Length: 460
Image (cartoon, rainbow, N blue to C red; front, top):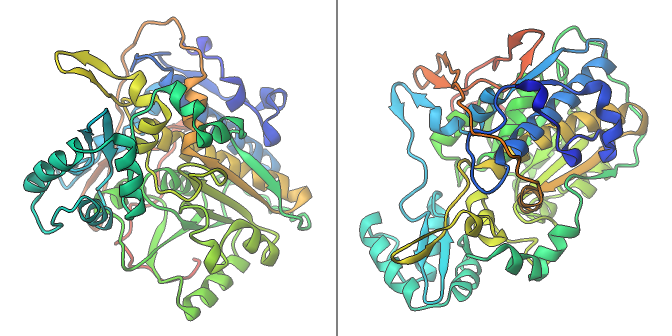
């Protein structure tokens, strides 16, 4: 069934989105065409993003003297997009969303909150007048009562103003009519801007395409860390840096912390910023996943970084994109699905009326991760002749891409989940390896997640 796969054109292009340049680098794709089924082609989006990553890895490898033969198995893609679900930590199953990270019925529709992180939970409850000290079951009752008294979009605005994360349910048509929806629809899937520096050739390698290259990882949650663990699996030296006051959730760290080291540092401290500047001087890539503007005040936005370090490829990821009225809003995959109409597309009807749904996996996040990794590697290919560059993408734009993809007429097939077991400081980890087969062997992560925050701010 592999020869039935046809790449989605917008995901098939090389640097600059030119699909015609991808022909020689097209990876072999095997496996079933459909398995989740549903009203959107989530499978096509998922496999298309991993294939884009494979193409970029092949280009980069060829430039460096070793072009890998890469196969993408759609069963492995399916498992990788549900990696958190398959993770086992010393035999323990992983808990997904927190109790308050769900839909609530408002006076005129539905609203969804995201409260997995303690500071977002506190902001949500305080904005609704609920005691943050209440246990989740009692707080959920109080939140439900408060939400039922207000309109969904009023709640969206109010909770966001208080530092929380919320989205009112919209239809796809309502989203496209929204000012920010129109901005997102007009944007490219992956935006690339030259950095203005001189070209910098890459040394040859007999190992992975990213071997010997350094990646500073300032990302959180799923999308950005998925990109950087993929780059690490392909050979990069990845150093992730997190703020000490708001640590990553441990299970999230264990899912996405493979193939990288982990440090904690307050980027607002002058001594730390000076050390980060030294790291950037010797780095090849900076990947950031904070809200647009959040790092710019520290001099770590793409324009500022490229002025000082024009050799870098700077990759920036956000929920809503840089431009438009929501450009500085907080967001997660589940929240973007609600605002952009995906949750309405997956809604079901019952005795109580319409109930919103969700994608079968966090597909916007994982797609963003593989597309970001692809954009980084394509940026490194271009850097050899044209210098560094900035690349950007957003979850909202990926949602727009997904909703514009035609749904194939294919029956849902079965997929096998191939996991690996790796020893770590946290006990044995059962996990899903990267969804790439390189020269006939399944790609593996070179190292398990390190103890969170336990590494120095230093390259190997």
